[in-house]
Length: 441
Image (tube, rainbow, N blue to C red; front, side, top):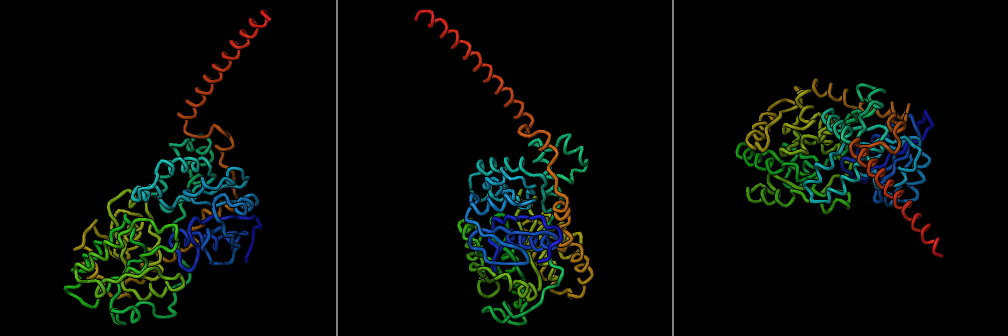
């Protein structure tokens, strides 16, 4: 382990970190890897995690795990997902400086899932008051977080006085990519999956089929492409989330396979897998010819940052993206592919056919610039800087237990005063009654 500053930094992942992992696990693994060059890092991971790196690891059973509590008690800085912070009581007793990671727009996702939004919002409200520093994945998310924090009283003369830009309160740490380009080690898809030959053109859908995404448009687009080219294959290699806690989440898996079957594409032009081991993921990227990231027109899309898109950029894969999210902005900004409208299967089909005719060499300059700008080492700099110079949020110091939404703090203060006055009056009346009774004894 390479350690500069000896201060202990703890990163808590609420998702599995293993050879099969999704976006959150990948994020916290790489943030731990980057911070380990400067600090003594421990990555705390849930049961079922197996991966290791140039940092310490601790496997915890729940947010109340005693070992996790002890780890937090020794930490200088703790980095915790916003959605999980309220489930870790030790954070509220800790003297550590707290970084809240708000990259995942969990409320926007949860509205699709039928979960208890009220409990989630209560827990998130606690988290808004907990953080000394907040990070998110895009400037668009940062605007959202500034609104959330204003609503909870965190934008005030103390935080504004420290930094009028409020970057010391909320800054952007997006997903990144590795500095070293991916290397092929063995075939995973072409010539391996039945029905996909070595010379076929592979269109990659890299993540899950979550309800806020739009795999059905991708399949309808393939029906159009298939009429002109029978050498194109659309693959969904990640239909089963590696974290068993996520097994009950609704997906488009069944609807996608039914649609592919109805269109006569299943097993011929459209293929489904379960989940690719992380060590094999570079091979899948390098065997693919194009990548898709399609979503519906929802609140989730407005706030989301699609982690798999960074993998596409890492591998130099031209991208077809639905407009409206932060990663489609990246595709536009760096000219890495084609942005299409919502649910536009004709537009997606035309984009596939156009990009398949474009030589890969034509993309070299754009992808090289994006790769230089978006490495984990570069995008994590606001977090590295905070860990080098951690500080308590000034409003937490100044306001203490009066921190929060000013209206509710005012109303609670008034209510407490009324109760105190009532209790004082009740006490006085009781003493008078006792005094009168004593005269008759």
